[in-house]
Length: 167
Image 1 (cartoon, one colour):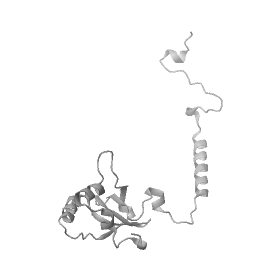
Image 2 (cartoon, one colour; image 1 turned 180 degrees about the horizontal axis):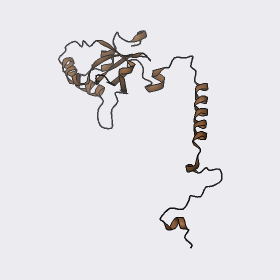
Image 3 (spheres, helix red, strand yellow; image 1 turned 180 degrees about the vertical axis):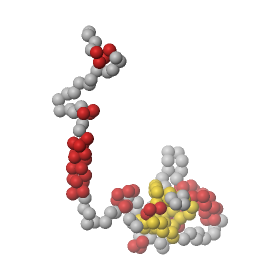
Image 4 (cartoon, helix red, strand yellow; image 1 turned 90 degrees about the vertical axis):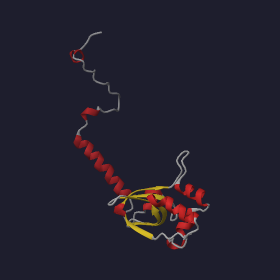
């Protein structure tokens, strides 16, 4: 087997390129930009700009009344509660600060009335929103609430507050 000058210096041989393949290192940047712009134009043409962006469909498909954990920024806060309304303007939520969750459970167990207000957060403050779901063997906050109080949190959080009369 003969060794080429290129291989004798510890370099790898050039990869073999099959039919219909391009060599990655020799892609013309202008050609790549042209392809990316063409793909973007195709996406823009296929998107219906006359319809408002439906955040429920695009992001998480949450329905009003869904129990979520929301992370806000400026200042950083974490909340647990029920979505009352979600739009491209912001989020209306009824719930408590995550730090106060155990206090809420104690209040309900003691038979006291739950008096959380409805809060609105502009969308620029909403950093993350996730459904309150169990994770493997760890109970969700909703399940913990129900287990400790004997009540379903959804009706407690949404009763009389859902937009459009959904309850």
